[in-house]
Structures are given as structure tokens and as C-alpha cells.
Length: 180
Ligand SMILES: Cc1cc2nc3c(=O)[nH]c(=O)nc-3n(C[C@H](O)[C@H](O)[C@H](O)COP(=O)(O)O)c2cc1C
Image 1 (spheres, rainbow, N blue to C red):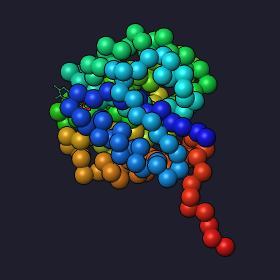
Image 2 (cartoon, rainbow, N blue to C red):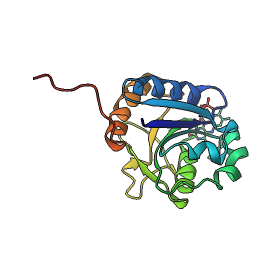
Image 3 (tube, protein in one colour):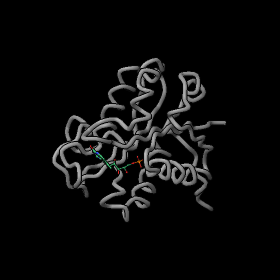
């Protein structure tokens, strides 16, 4: 049976809490195993063909500290053939010129090492100046964009919408079969 590996790093617990919500939101259709990036190795990534990776941005466009510590490890991971959905946390008003930059850096890393990213998320509904986490046309983020500092009330709805995309992009069966 398909299992998804969800990798996250989190300094204050926001990204970790979102990871748990995603795990619970997919529980009916697929098992999601959570891995703190700080305890992960290239072998941990080898266990999965489908990945979700969550990263907050810190210190003016920088990686969260556990991701920073593990970046060389991540450069050893063979992502080829793996399907990866990314989510990022940031603060669009407090750090408007660096919104979600770390998700952009992670996107670059996984695609340059053969990964296929899915489940991009539209930029509408956010207010920021610049982000390195945008697709080339600037119309989408490279993964789900969450802002627990300024728009926490939208988080659950955004996660729910994004999980519908993931189900489609990962080819997961839903239990909502038409009764007829
Ligand atoms: C000191 C500090 C620096 C931050 N820098 C950025 C930033 O450059 N870009 C951004 O989008 N968010 C930034 N944030 C917002 C965090 O990404 C946000 O609070 C996030 O939810 C933290 O997630 P965590 O609790 O999982 O670490 C910063 C927050 C703090 C406290």
C-alpha cells in the first residue's frame, strides 16, 4: 500500500502543527508518516516514492535552522522519480520582500536532484512584495502557502483545498464514491 513520507522542520511549532493537520486530513485515504528533518537521512527518503515537505522561512529569506543544518544531507538525496508536494510557512506583512523564500530554495534543490513537484497554489488572496517561491509566470507558489502570523484563520481552509489537489496529483483514491 502507498505510504507518504512527510518531512518538516519547525522552530516554533507552526509547521509541525500543519504537518499533523495534513496527516489527519489524508488519514482516510492514505497513511502519512511524519519525519522531523533533523532526524532524517538519505535512507529515510528512500522509503518513499511520494513526499510532502514543509519548510518555514526565517531571518529575511533564510532556511529554518534544522533545514540549514541538514542541507548537505539533502544534497545527497536522490529525488529522481519521486513526486513531491511542498508547503511553506511565512509572514507576508512582516517579511513582505522575503515571503516563503525558503520554500523556493527547497523547490530548487529537489528539482535539480530529479524530483517532480506537484500541487502548486495560486497567489490570489496574499499580499506581499516579493517571493522566491513563485512559479515562472508568477501566478502560483511552488507549493501551498500558509501564513500563521497574518492569516491564521485561512489555514484550515487552505489545507483542505490543497489536499484535494494532492489527492489528484498523487493519484489517491477517495472514499467519496458515488452511490448508485
Ligand atoms: C525572526 C523571524 C524571522 C522570520 N523571517 C521570515 C522571512 O524572512 N520570510 C517569511 O516569509 N517569514 C518569516 N518569518 C515568519 C515565520 O516563517 C513564521 O512565523 C512561521 O510560521 C514559523 O514557523 P515554525 O514555527 O514552524 O518555525 C520569520 C519569523 C521570525 C520570528
